[in-house]
Length: 411
Ligand SMILES: Cc1cc2nc3c(=O)[nH]c(=O)nc-3n(C[C@H](O)[C@H](O)[C@H](O)COP(=O)(O)OP(=O)(O)OC[C@H]3O[C@@H](n4cnc5c(N)ncnc54)[C@H](O)[C@@H]3O)c2cc1C
Image (cartoon, rainbow, N blue to C red; front, side, top):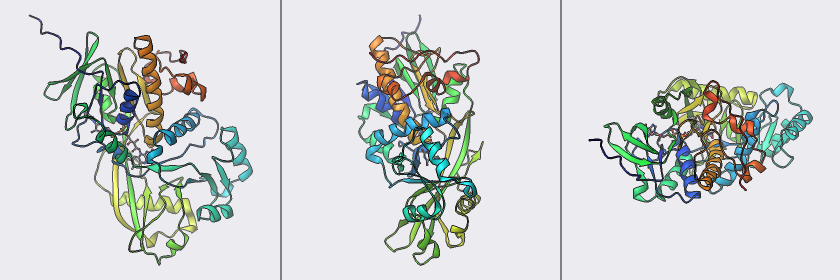
């Protein structure tokens, strides 16, 4: 006799309790789909790459209005709104890569052509930068830029969940669609839940689960190490240090003064493709020092800094460097959010809004739309065009699939 098919136990199951999982949780809650279950292999949320306490965020300046540039403008706007209560900082100063050829007028024109204005992106000469941000290097100041603790966002999101909405220390080994529902299994083939929707928000772990469904996504690990350096109040660097966060070849938080008056300065991040080693490497701390030296030239003297501690994480990166988000074509009710690369803060925020609007449309029409991401009226009004949405979908990796279907704004 056939085994009886288990009945639906949840509205949705979210696999992965990092910042991508938080985006999915928020989107479900925004649609009052509260009977969900979040599963994670670790004993606490935010113990993967989202264990990061200082994730910087500012929009990207492209050579032209590339897809990455346009998407990052929208994603940044979502990030400062969605993560507002976690936002820290007083702006990010982005240093020009080519210091010898920085032209303020040309940069100003370029910024305006990419949709920035004089308030949200300010090109500064070296002399102006010294006055405003504390270092004599030309670049562009983003007054709204800042950073968040991804770990804290994960922790607080989980604290608010009911006990029956979360199950930690649980590795998902398999997902399978049986009839109209998804079955989710652990490593011992125990059924963890049955639901119409599954969100794969588990970083590199998305690859084997989608692989079981013959859906291949080209993901790779990129190891990164963030170094915190210490130096004395009497050091020459303490007299010349920046007043705000910096970005460029390296990412730097503003220096933090401790109770004993000495300083700590967090700087990142090394970039080791195809490595998933979570051990701290002295060579990566040195690499971070070298990056600041290249970025700041004579303004910086590395010899005064000593390593205090490091954070190591493994970025998940797609071969085209864009995040992967949206419904998985051919698998109704299956969604993913992965490949957030080095921009977890902004991509998770954009995804949260897109999933919120997509789920609302699906529920309105009582059907799954797996071939496209349905942006609602709000995102469509911000200029989220068809080609941009298509560039995010998992389907972009399938040969012969056309992603160019229209976005359907909400009525
Ligand atoms: C050194 C470094 C510096 C960075 N700096 C910045 C920055 O300045 N700004 C910025 O925006 N971003 C930054 N990032 C990137 C950011 O940290 C990531 O993009 C983000 O944390 C990825 O979140 P995630 O939820 O996709 O992955 P994770 O946080 O790794 O979450 C995935 C979760 O899935 C779980 N999981 C995996 N497989 C399974 C399974 N089979 N069953 C159950 N659970 C599973 C894991 O346990 C994990 O908790 C940085 C990254 C690094 C490494």
